[in-house]
Length: 403
Ligand SMILES: Nc1ncnc2c1ncn2[C@@H]1O[C@H](COP(=O)(O)OP(=O)(O)OP(=O)(O)O)[C@@H](O)[C@H]1O
Ligand SMILES: [Mg+2]
Image 1 (cartoon, rainbow, N blue to C red):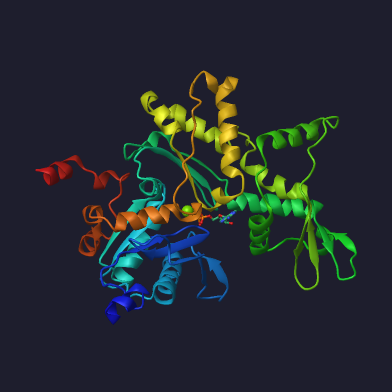
Image 2: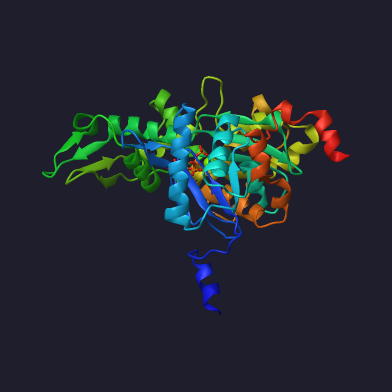
């Protein structure tokens, strides 16, 4: 093999026109190259604030100028520290939520085109490209990320926008439930072996510690166990199921934290508890199904695709399926949905980067050239043509184009 081919493989001298694929998330950003089977890097969406020097989340700001600064710094880190390629004159695929605010999309495009002078950008809807990893074009795609869960049914490659659903549930909700439970029931063990309530030692646990505890020790319990736990809350005569073993977790210094078994399973219950509007993960799937045209429902129900980091929680998909089947047979839904053949797909990648992988597949096909937004076209209007913006979808313009 010639030497230059070998070097191109490790990314130092990357082929000039390899498309770069980004999936910017509120918690984690995935970045890599089209045609590869996984992102080169998955890193926290955080940058150092230019004024204070503190580490801040990239997308947690309402100020447009501040967001632009943060994106410039963050994308610099992605290109020059992790991907090691020159952004100039290189194509980009941005995997994004279909419901991303137009402002955020425009600022991102401005940074990529004006600051980094990329050749072109394709904005690929994450729910749509996730289906590409499975080679199907119909499915009900649910993305359970950090900040929120979004559900969009896609039929024959077309998102059914009238049936989209969103809920503010995800990794963040699990963290706050875990924090509450630990402060209430967790025991801190000192060097001398003495146990104290965690809340008497510290007021809050850092987000990173909560995430580590969640990923290492928490799981989603089965529907039967969960219903017994809930019945026991209201009627003490019902025996609760035996709790899972407690875990000793090292905190700072020589201090340890005893995480009771009940906390390990109760922390994730927040994803399945219905809120004041009686909404939870399983109910939004059934609600969305009701809003879809009747002849698409069976196919959608048989093609559920669950993506996003929180979908990696142990037992989540099993519990979700059990809950949907029980709810669909219940009085509230059985008359309207009338389907009980729900099935969940198993995508060929870890749940947190399925959408990125879809973007990498799209970036490697010819289709990318047709849907791309070139730099010169962006520089004319200084904004990304938007499907929900009527001024970009004028009938006369469309007719002119098709003529
Ligand atoms: N193996 C795992 N078990 C449990 N949780 C996990 C696992 N892997 C990742 N997560 C959680 O998934 C969340 C991040 O998921 P993801 O990367 O899809 O979010 P995001 O794309 O940044 O967020 P959003 O889509 O809301 O913008 C984090 O809360 C993280 O703790
Ligand atoms: Mg995401």
